[in-house]
Length: 397
Image (cartoon, rainbow, N blue to C red; front, side, top):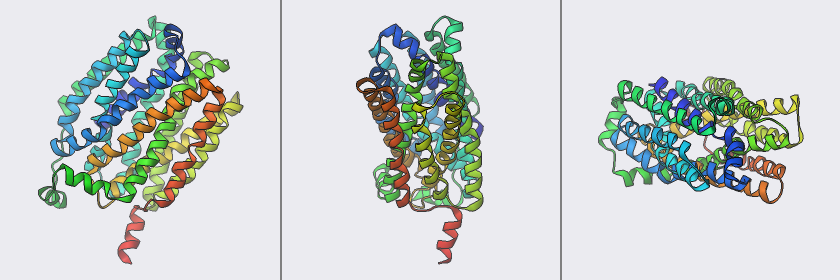
């Protein structure tokens, strides 16, 4: 099941979406688009997703992961291919919006799947492996998007390929995926589980839930803004579109090492927060150096920014699963709420970055998004420690 969830993250959440930024320079020329319009198109995905993530999470809690993803995956496949038929700003914007709607039923529930199948001593590593899927897929998309557009005679054909790959994955999911029936304590909890409203009230009565929502709003919004608009910024500075796509993909490849190292250390030590906030701050410094560097030094700081981001992200998701008020039983609703907030960031922050880049300067837009990273690092100070070492200490006390 982890392999299936990994593949969905790789193809649907990774490759299909991230083949778009490397061809943004071509789309901008074809359609006459500004930075602000490109940022709005990129953010439309998040707008659709934030509108339905909570619904998608609750649906999986009530009707099962396999059934919900079986419907949503085919929708993502069709809409991903339809991007190739877009002719102007609004048609492409609407395609991305409705892809986001289908993703609202997919992406939050991938993490729920991990919560259902893995225990506390494996949770950090399982989350790391899951997120490696999107890192690999995004890296491949950023790497091959521009060369594929050149080889196939246009960016439109790249979108058709993405839709086809998603359709193949949908068939694989229908044939092989399965739900896990609750056992032991989980089975008893299911019997006493309240209705949807009671479950949501329980989830959102937890202080850490709100803090994690705000943290992910900024973290995911920053990531989306930088990945979406940096290729066009680099092309204006003198890179080719192929080189810019390769460059931006490096942060995804570097994050793979972080997704192995950070969760492994965290699971071994039994702590979460100490492996999150320092790396979030380090990422701020690395992103802030991007506009002033060139050559090997630019590549170095970009790779380091991906490494530390990869170390922190799986552990944020692990904390949510380990909150005793939520656990695997209500994780669909919890991640639905979290993904609603992080896609608010995914919609607003790319748009704001594009507005700053269009109205002031492109470099100032990068500085603006880099500085926002201080917010989630500060909020981590108020999040409860949930690692198994801390829980043992609390139980002993």
